[in-house]
Image (cartoon, rainbow, N blue to C red; front, side, top):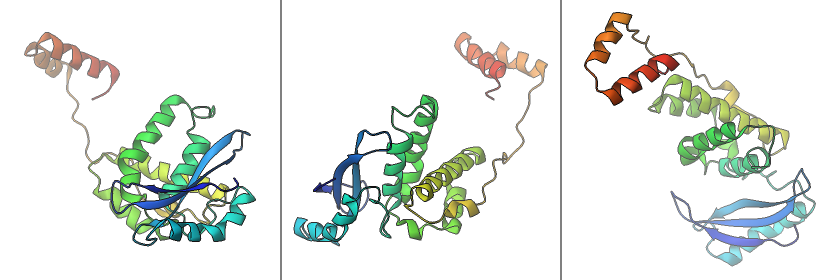
Length: 211
């Protein structure tokens, strides 16, 4: 990265932000797009102010590999770095299904709540309360918790952050209630009152253990 560019970017929630974007060689030798949030338009009133904010970091960026080693890095910045290194289509050590699943949790649950949080402000207690408030099964909450921990571990490996607050988050994967198990005669009575399509779906569910 030599100069890069300053871009005003929209956010789904809150004011627009100023981002600094550039390209540099990745771990695989290919050039990767990088970005870091400099601040909101409320903090940096115009592009000139954004350029001034980046000037102090430009020398560090030009040495490569240190683009997020700042105290102002946010969860969104960390997730972007994780996606580039771990969820890229060319990454072979994760299956396509795993990548799609991780992207779903990131986009639907984690980023809408935490993307603007500075990494130093994320704490175990707040994450724990948030997980308990989600309208999801405990197993799904546990998967979200585990993914957040994976992302923070990634940040520690790349010296983006120096701690993983998610390690202290308590989240059980056990079911909240014991499922009701139907007997063979109950299943037969249920099938007798269903149409062909519904009967097929019920048989599929019972046969695959999806209920």
